[in-house]
Image 1 (cartoon, rainbow, N blue to C red):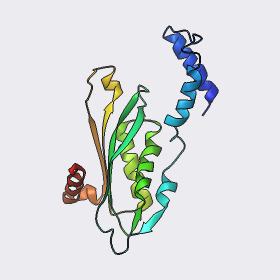
Image 2: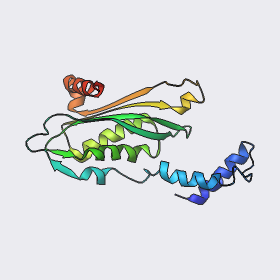
Image 3: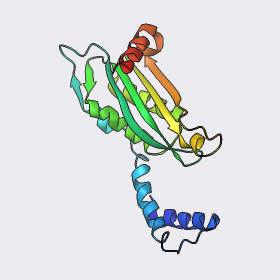
Image 4: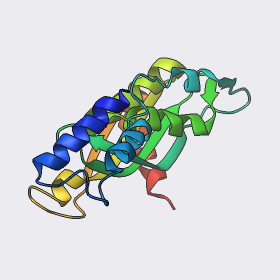
Length: 187
């Protein structure tokens, strides 16, 4: 990431909205924003493959659906550069191999930490799990609130956008999809 370009852009933005970037409260803002960008856009240039490569044999078990639900995430809308956030639910049906549960959360982070749209994020997570684990099927559901709808535009706080991506058996068998939905509804 080019820290200097980010700092210059923030100064121009502040000037553009009529602020003085040299006033005491804003003097360090370009530097703070540049450092923040390293964190919130840290998924750029990364892939989850290294995380998902650490797999374990599912001998003597692991033939049922694996679900990790309520994974919190924060991302940035690529259309307005404001946050959207919510939770991700991931399910997969192993075909001999399972992955450490934290690796699914890390996969979410890799894709969420870049300018993004929710529809693409959902598919990227599903495709990464399918590609790296080659399970019988993968399903990903994301529920999120978009600040571009909350603080600007239609200004409807609390509105949730729900997206779903299904691969393999979850795409072709409604019973498997329903089992996933039942499991994520349970407390």
